Length: 368
Image (cartoon, rainbow, N blue to C red; front, side, top):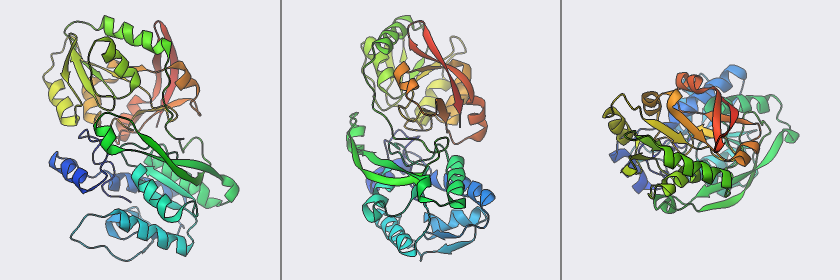
């Protein structure tokens, strides 16, 4: 487990690669989310395969959470108490796991952690990611922590090479992302359990779509006066801002009212402060896109839209926009939510109308 993975999400950082980013995240009040998410995956694994033998990285890198989940653990050494974990600690742990011949390398982290593993052992071991990062463009992650535990259990009950499929490891340049530029690089391929309903593919790039552009123009022209509108990350929502003559953030959350940008690249605290100052009427709305290839609605790349923010807005004031082609290419054809709050995920599940062009919607199933 990479303990600091995902810390930057709610504070509007584009990741936590490197000590400087971690310091910034903590200065902004970020907290570690990886331990709780790893434990949820391991609890599902322990319930499904209680006899599983676990070889874990030391202490806060895995052994602590595995024991908390009720698993019997063999721990790989110890870590110093006076520093954060480093990529070298990940590399050392996975190299030893390869030498010990584990059946499945289950890791909790993001794209950076997947890269560290790939750099160290290549495709020598089957692997599966518990999604805890901010970006997660790679195709090695389960849809949620619970899905990771279920997929790992299914494979360990029958660790057959034919039950594996090749998946891409990719990563976004965080420095470019902080400058609002998307620079994604493919680093290689590994093998993951073949579980289409539990393991999602890599993020797919967006293509120009006339219907979506026309929809963005319509939304921009019909925003009610006086209403606060939040726009999540992505090219579709960026098109709405473009038609308003505004420049927000491609990878952040922006806020507009009466044709003016009133908040740019807002973090969770900034969003809550803005929402708490809003009157009841007209109620604020949120316009959000869909992550191509993965179907993620909340929980990937937009963690600043936290459970507290989403509850403040309300399910009925969330407007989903995406191209029809993006929806048709999803396999399985569903949208996913993974906010970190299981009760909220259940409330958001069901069915939603996704606007794909002016006057045209597609009904999509939403699940965890």
